[in-house]
Structures are given as C-alpha cells and as structure tokens.
Image 1 (cartoon, rainbow, N blue to C red):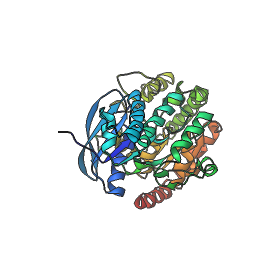
Image 2: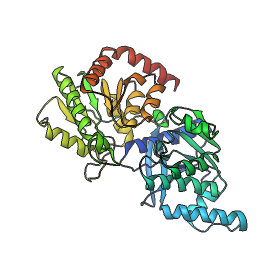
Image 3: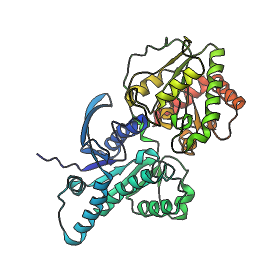
Image 4: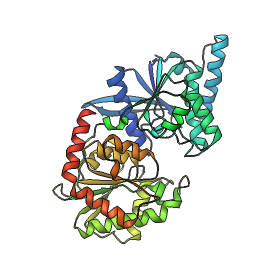
Amino acid sequence: MEVNYKNLLLGVKLDSYNRGVNALAIGGINYIKSNFNQDSILIVNIGSKASIERTVLINNRNFKIISKSFSLRNFIKSCLTGLLFRFFKRKPKDELSKLIYHSEIAYNLNEGDSFSDLYGKYRFFSHFFVSLALLAWMKKLVFLPQTVGPFKTIYGKTLASYILKRLDKLLVRDTAADNFLDKRNIQREYNFDVACKMQPRPVNFDYFSLDSFIVGININALMYFNAYGFSKYSNRYQQLLKKIVDFCLSKEYKVLLIPHTYDIENKFSENDYESIRDFVNKNNYINNDNIAWVSNDYDAQEIKSIISNVRIFIGSRMHACIAALSTNVPTIGVAYSYKFKGTFSNFNQEDFVLDIKQISEVQIIDKVATLIENKKNIVEQLKEINEKI
C-alpha cells in the first residue's frame, strides 16, 4: 500500500558521516512535531540509498523515521514534470514526483549551511534543484533555521534570490545574511538551530572518570587536511591544537578528542577520525594516559551524550559546538565561517568564538583559561538559555 506523506523534510540525512547533518534531521523532526503539530513526515534527500529506516529518540520516546533518497537527475526531472503538470495537468509517474504531488508542505534545512556557494558548485546546485522541484509543483516551502550564504558568485546570488523570494517562510539562526536579504527585501524570522532540540542518547562513558576535569576537543578535518580549499588554515590550525592540548596536559586535565564528521572504517577528505589519528601520532601522544579519543561509530545522539560529559569543549565543527552549548557545556568555537558567531550569540557566548584567520597561540590559551575561570557562571547562563529553548 502506497503511503502519502503530508510533510517532507529536505536537506538532511540520517546516515551521513556528518553527525551535524544527522542532528539536523532528528532536530528537524522534533521541530516539525513541536511547532507545526505534524506527525506524517518523510525525509527526502539526494543520495544513493533508495530507502532507510532509523529509530531515533525524541522526548524520551523511540520513533521510526523513514528516509528516501533520489539522484540529482531525479530532482531536475521532477522540476520539469511539475511544470508539465501546471500546464497540462499530467499526473506524475515517477516516485519522487508522486511524493511531492501528494505532499502539502516541505521543510528544507539545506544541511544547516549549504544554501551557499561556499562549498562549490555541485553542493549549491544540488540544494537549489531540491528546492526548485518543490516550487515547480507549487508546494509550500519553508526553510527551517539555518545559515543562508555567503554567496560570492553571480549565479549563487541570482539563483538563491529566486528561491528565497518564493518561500512560504524563511527561518534563519543568525544575522549573517541580513545585508544580502535586506537588499532583496526578503523577510525572515530568527530562531535557534533545530539541533539544539535533539535529545542525547546515553552511552557507556569509559574514557575517563567523570570526576576528572575533562576537556573535549573536536578536530575538524576540513581545516586539518585539504577539503574545499580549507588547507590554507592547516598549519595554523595544527599549531593551535597542539598548544591547547599541551596547555591542558600541563594543568593535569584529561583530554578527549572527539570526531563529529567521521567513519572509522572508510577514509575520505572530511574524516575527523583520520585527523585525530594523524594529530596523535605526529605529536607523540599515543601512549599518554591523559589523552583518549572516540574510536567507535556513534550516532549523532550518542556523540551528543559523550560531549555532554566533558567539563569544557573546544570545537571546530559547529554542530559539535551546538551539542556542547545545548547541554550546558562551556564552549570555545575555533571558527572558519561566520556562522559560528551567530550561533554562539544565541547563547550569549559570542566572546568565545575565535577566528582561525586571526587568533594567535597566546590568545587562544588566554581564552581557554578565561573559559575555565568563568566556567561556573557560564554553566548557569547556558542553563537559563536552554530552559527557554
């Protein structure tokens, strides 16, 4: 029996290597259930796996979530099919177009920050055609809280404007695109990143005693290695990481290195686990009892649980930082993008965003020391904000 879903959730995955994208999927489901009182939700995305099912924890209950993937070509074809339907009322025959045809509204998260040309043409056009397919079928389209832009190319600015002007609602999690949106008279509302609402799933924490002062550090392979042109930060980033770890060890703190986009078995350019292995080996930390690293393939909810157990967190993946901030862990963001500033400001923690292009080794240690010194007050601030969320 064919099931028709009233609500489609786009631009997220449940099986991505990027736990941030998975956190957006789970948080997005929770957001739609809570704010729009909807339960009939299907995740639709670009990918190679036709259909997957996952059980996720929402409000202490297990929910079965179904995700269907289609090729970029399928979405482009659905754009054309939708236009034909407008003029000739020709009903769809392909599966993707049928799903869109029977839906009432779609919510797009664009992987949180990928409605942008920052990550190259393929990623931008992928997200563009996903949204265009819904608009071609004249469906309501809402962008859930995300970072829009930056757009540095003419095609990026032009095509992004076309989509943004036709949304039923635009929700953003920061003010980063205000200038771009104001120039085009595009209305928007502000809200927290939906991953804030993702519930941690407890796992056995056997790295250190929880009575220890544990510093969690996320190493971002984008900046550590060469991916999407981020190699220009590589040397500075590696030097800063070593300075931070050595400072923590000198204070006899425990250091837990935490990947957030990773796969233990498979190598790829963004794999945080590979950057952790390289960092540990290069700096001879391999036999140091005060350093440990996550070496199991935990899902997004389990990783959030692990992060929630550290005393302070230093991250370079934004959703790793969100996992910490939303569980009341004082956090420093070593930022490569303006999206960090906006998200940290939602928690009144913008002073703890450090720009990788500008921060020095001395400054970052001073900031770590300041975070530790003010830890108690920061925890109370975060608790108050998270209660409001």
